Image (cartoon, rainbow over all chains, first blue to last red; front, top):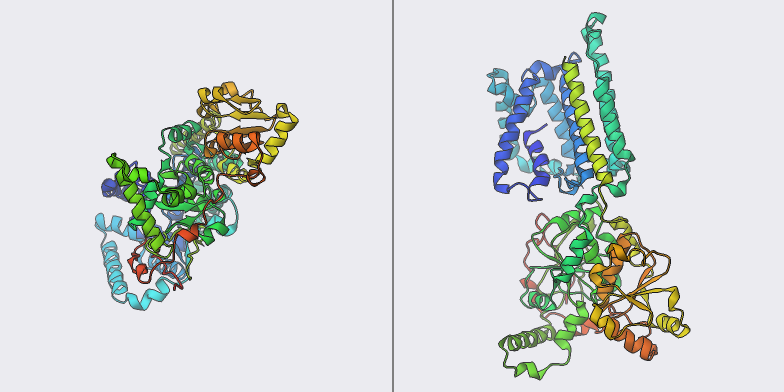
Length: 418
Length: 200
């Protein structure tokens, strides 16, 4: 229940999708922090008795508030994802370090019961002038100092048993929507059970329980909403993110989809890594030969979820190539339709590139009066020399972009050796 | 009182969600087939070899197929495959051609560049139209090697076949050239580049 964790969670899709200027993120963090603090104070969490109540069983309001907020936000996110407004792949998920997660959970639990605050509520408590909350904050900073100072001692535990970006529904092997429904049902069961415990501990008589408001309607509605997302066909979800065929046709017609072979030669010649080259040929051909720095992806892999982060990162253009342009065109069509913007096709493929370099040299261009043609020819001659001398070999110059596919934890094979 | 407000709020949110879902279901879809399904279907049965095409032309059984010429109209007028109809590449999804490409007959596509006919096939697959195949190569190669004379060496021609022995043209690197590789990751957030094992 951290302020920053919530902040990142909300900012996640906005900044990468370019809705919010990254420079303004601290401003929004401030707004969110104010709102979070206000809600905590209004819910009465500035009192240590509320948090301690969860452990003694006389007051479960903390659990109810956070669980309600959680499932409401979850159903909302499922809805936005369904409409295609939020790309779930862009949400920041804390990676799982198993040992520190378990140990941190235990420490946090002891902190709750001993101090009566969690980090967020202690600040709320301190702001309204509670001395115990101020002491609690002092403890937080002391702990931070000790941890930082003796980090080398804690490090093996802190970074131990790294599991990557783990999703509960993937670990359980069920779909995200079913997991959502299970979470909602769990929350409502928890509300009912904790209410029963609360009544027993407080020895609440019928004069109290009879007066209690009836929460049947909201409970029913949120279950219904979660259930509807399970029922909806998965293929229809978030199709609004798809680029329509008209855009695909237009970008091929106005040549926006293509990158010239000269530009690829230039990149190889000058050992740049401005473009990410993606080899779409069969794996055997890729293993035998590929352009320096190229990675291998098949058409089937492109729409898979684990590549979304890679394709959504628009910092470098990604260029598909094959022996000709046909396979690359198919790959581009699939990737561009999925809504990835900065993807291109290498015009003519490897055949064209090597044809340019090693095809029949034309003497006419060498003597041409046209400056552009002569420069073009000189560029190609020089590049040809460079290729033959071995400067453009796979092992030279451009390192492959080392790409991590989070879910599948697939590592692009790096080809070495002679 | 509080409960009433709560119920009203919950109802409001629920109806908003229902409205959004209904809107999403009712709005026109751009594609009839999901991207994943199209990607799976792409490699299946995509090319028509010159062998097959010349056999069809020899038997005169073009009527059983819909051969689509995707080139501009003037090029189509200047010459086209026997029995081919002209649908320009950028109009392949136009409504008026829906009746023609109905999935009853197998569709053969060709254009002035092979990758353009491939692109048209992907677009048609996206609309859920299967049984679309591409005649390998472009109009010039089809005419030369399938219609005028069928050469055995060209009967399985395909533009995506490697025409060079690529590794021959990229010699192994001279010693020391590996040092130029920067050690920083190229993709933000990725691990540092793993050093290449081996080497001469």
